[in-house]
Length: 341
Image 1 (cartoon, rainbow, N blue to C red):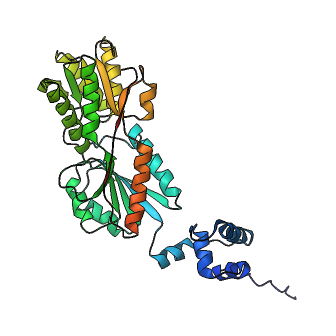
Image 2 (tube, one colour):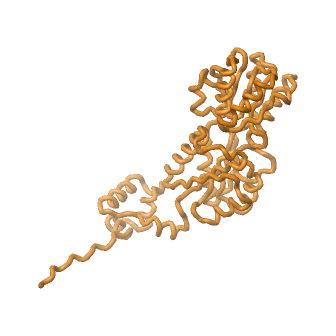
C-alpha cells in the first residue's frame, strides 16, 4: 500500500517574519505591537494589520519572561477592619471598575484579591508570588504599618486612602477632613445644632472624617455630644442596628453625618421607618457620591470624591513607579453636592 506524502507543517510565524514583510527591524515590530507611541500610528496600524492577516500571535509567556514582566496589576482590597464588607459594596464596585478600565486600557490584566483577616506577612507573600508587576490597594483598613513596611523596600505600590501620620507609602485620596468639615458646616448653616456622626472607629478615612466633623462643630461653638457618635459599619446589615440603637437611646439629634453614602442611605431608611422625616426633622449627609446617592429617596446630599480622577491618578502613579520614578502622594479637594436630604 502506498502512502500519500504528507504536507510539512508550516513553521510558526516569527516576529522576524513580520519585520521582513514590513521592511523594518524586529524591535520596531515589537514596539509597534505593544502600542508604543514612539512608533508612528500609521506604521503601527500597518504592522498590526500584517500580523493579523498572517496569523501572527505574540507569545505572551515568552515576552513576559524576556521582559521580566507579567503585564498584570494586582488590585487588593484589605478588610481587616470590616470582615463582613463585600466586594459588591457600591463604593468598591465603582472604584474597582474604574481602576480596571484604566489598567486594561494600557494592555495589562487585573488580578483582584480580597484579603480578610490579613496575616502579618500577607503583603510580602503577595509580592513574593511574582504574579503582578505592581499593586494597587483600595483602602488602608487596619494595615497602615504593613503598608509602611512594604513601601520601604517595594516601589510599585499605590494606596487609595487618607493622609494619616507617618505614612511612607504613595497614597491617592480625598482630603477627608476638609470634606467632612464642609458637610457639617452645611448642616450648621441650615440651623442644625445636634449633629450625629455615624462611622466605624479605627478606620483611617473614617477617623479623618470625624476630625473634620469635630473641627466644624468647634468652629461654630458647638459641643460634640458623645452620645451622638454611633459605630456604624459599612454594610446595611450592620449599619441599620447602629442607627436603630441611636434612635432608641432617646438622644436628641437634628442632623446626621455618615462616613459613607451606604451608611447615609441606611440611616434615611431607618429614620423614615421610625417615623422621622428627612430632611424636615433631620438632615442627612453622606460621603463618596456613589451612583446610589442620586437615586435614594430623597436624593442624598453628600461629599463627592472624584473616583474617576482618583483611579486614573492611581494607575498613572503606579506605572511611573514601575518604571523606577519617584512620585508624591495626591489628595484631591472634595466637593459638597447638595441634593434633597
